[in-house]
Structures are given as structure tokens and as C-alpha cells.
Image (cartoon, rainbow, N blue to C red; front, side):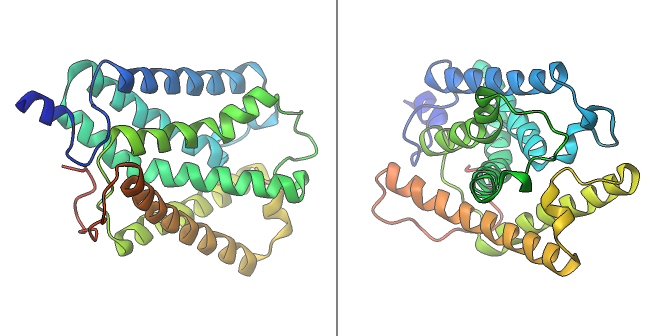
Length: 239
């Protein structure tokens, strides 16, 4: 009984870390992420030879963080390590909301005007690869959170600070890349002035913060808790 409680948080629907369904989800996720990275290598374009490589794209930064999250999660499954499980949950606080933001931004901008996200020189993106880059990570991470993780316990203000650091840190990074490459990874940035870019990144930070709250609420619904307790700042590991 004690071992079972260690591997399953009281507010967690399915057993994790475990070598069963949890390990399968993490392994399948990592296989998809590996395919996405391989696609970048075997389908090169001018980004491959530019400063920052594909890490200029928020999509690939998010994919890298998702890969780290699931790699730690799989190691936790295979070793039954509660410490690694806690690290995976801490990484998820950033990676899951970020992937939700990426998915929402990409598909909405693409629906409005594909030229906002695809430069003229970019070759067409294979539909399977497109889904792997812009949908699979968010689906996998949300599934992991809702079924195999304890609830988020990060409060609103720390969540907003984390989201703002990510959003404005990315802005600083792409401006550094632009200084060397003389082009932006997303054509949208070419169309915005400084004030509009500030608005874009503030909106992204707020959206990511809201996503964190919504994911916490969804966790409560899926795990049939009658009342989701107010988050307490400082415990993002779900211990």
C-alpha cells in the first residue's frame, strides 16, 4: 500500500511513475519528438545555416522543453524515482502551458493568413510533420498532466512571472538572432512595430498564464475533485 501511494499521488488519476501506461505515453511522445527533430535535419532550409538554427522558432524551443520533460518522466517511470517524477512535474509547469500557447497561436495565425508564420522561402511543411510540431506536444503534455500527474499548485503571480520571463526572454533571443541573420523566423514580426510587438508578447504571457489556470481546472474536473483548492505558491512539483 505504501509503495502504491508513492507511485500515485492522491489527486492523480493513474499510477505514475510506472512501467505501464505512463512509460508508454512518455516513450511514444519522445518518439514523436525525435521524428520532429529528424525532420529538421533531413529537410534543411536556410534556417539550418543561420544563427540560432531552428531554436529561433518558439515551436522548437517548446519541443525541446517538452522532450526534456518526457525524458525525465520516462526515466522516472523506469527507475520508479519520486525525485525524477517531481522534476518532471516541475518542468511541466512551463512546458505544458507553453505548448498550449504554441498550438493556439500557430493554428489561429495560420487560419488567418499562412504568410504570417511561413516565410516565402520556406518549403511546404509535410502535414504529418506539421501535426507533430504543432499539435502532438500539447496533446501529449496535457494528457500527461491530466492522467499521470498531481495538480499544479503554482499561484497566479508566480505563473504570470514565469510566463513573462519566457515571453520576453524569447523576444530578446529573436532580436539577437535578427542582429546576425537580418531576418525574423516568423514573418509576423516583420509586420509589427515595437509597440505592437510588446502587445504581442504581453498577450502571449497572459495567454500562457491563463492556460496554466485552465489546465489546473481541467485537472480538477478529470480527477473528479469537488473543489479545487486554491493554489499555494512555492510548490510546483506536486509533492
